[in-house]
Length: 172
Ligand code: K1U
Ligand code: ZN
Image 1 (cartoon, helix red, strand yellow):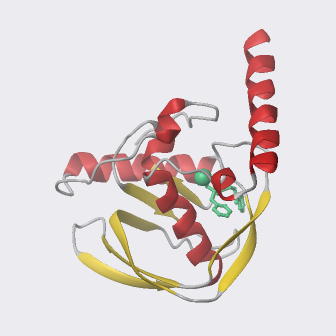
Image 2 (tube, rainbow, N blue to C red; image 1 turned 120 degrees about the horizontal axis):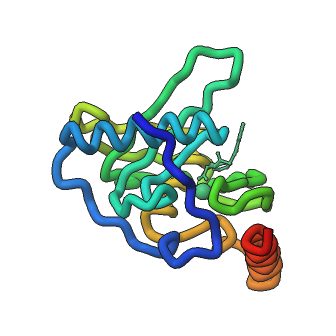
């Protein structure tokens, strides 16, 4: 397993629509394990494959707290099968948009069908932070960032800050 560099915005790779995983092979399991390790090290509560440059429809999540037992989820080829009518608002962050946060409204509950780390089909009814995080990570699979849910004014303000951060980092 290896720690993988996380791509930060602005970067065209974050706009890629990822392709389905054909089979959950040992190579895919290795990639998922490295993604989980990278997510824990960041630290974060979710990570989509494209954030580490792998354009495949897979993601990892663990919303357990520091003092709790780890509860990693390995999610391959997820499909939303149901969303609640009610929305909830959460102040989201993103490892690809460092130090940027904004309120995003999304369906409060979702049901998602996916393949697990063994390639078995599963369905999950997610509520609360898990529902928010799942939708945020699934957006990454379609090249969508949380700022794409904001007004153009707020989105451009955040993207300008990120561009400035990158320019300063390059300048040293
Ligand atoms: O980059 C990502 O997609 C991961 C992102 C997930 C997320 C956070 C909040 C709402 C929706 C989705 C993060 O993990 S940002 C970091 C973060 O939230 C966190 C970090 C340490 C402890 C607790 C949370
Ligand atoms: Zn993100």
